[in-house]
Length: 124
Image (tube, rainbow, N blue to C red):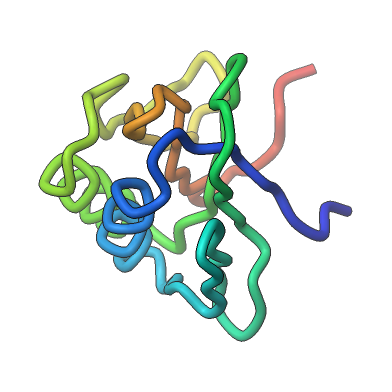
């Protein structure tokens, strides 16, 4: 089980402003702030951003309770400056009920919201 994930970001203030908006539809908010880093979560921080050289590919997927929340995440992220990396929709090649949306954050990290719907079983 994962405890937390951290991403390096080139501009902390810009990324903090982005994640403040993009994660809100998922029920997540900034719960910890330092000069060069921020932690997001519900009751505790489990998703962190920190100032540093943003390097390499990173994909983070956040669980959403329903498809409407995936849609809301996508809209909020685009409004906050994300670039589209896959609009909301079914991804039946993962499994029949996989509904996700993908955006690229200010540093190019692939950020996803996903709802597994009624059939979360992964294909064999």
